[in-house]
Length: 220
Image (cartoon, rainbow, N blue to C red; front, side, top):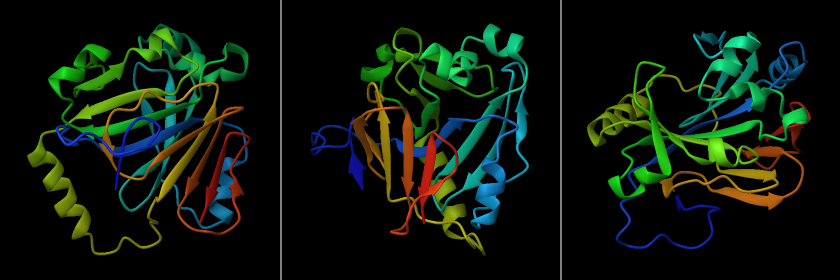
């Protein structure tokens, strides 16, 4: 499936769609009941890890080809001192920043790199869209730099996984907010934008939505 920007229309033939949707993140409160709600509904979470130097921690929910990252701030000074500025996204209700991020994997074409800056604080190259600084009310958009060989290797291992188990296929993402994410052309489930209060609905089926918290819902 192919989509660009707000995922309407068809990308030009000359565009090389070498990016894939990798994951999305949602800022959460560490002491909220989101983990209990996901567990009760049969959505497995890993134990997560700390983001050294970022002042945040996470837990992840795997899907068949992407994952959802639930992120919270556990060190305000580190979060506010890091160039990614995740502290303001964690404090979205007061700052107006978007509590969401969309991550892509693959090769960012040279023609698009002026819209990004290169961040190496995690030990591997990540391109950060400039709207993170200029328009923080939009979701953070970033690209994990991988070669085509890297992508093929990931697809090979994913397809040969012996037990994908409960990992469901993400078919669409519905994002609401004051402005859409500045997403590049990519392969993957469409990201559909509507104007409104911050919210993301992830679609994997046609069941009624599960409210994970005030920001996030899932349809199995």
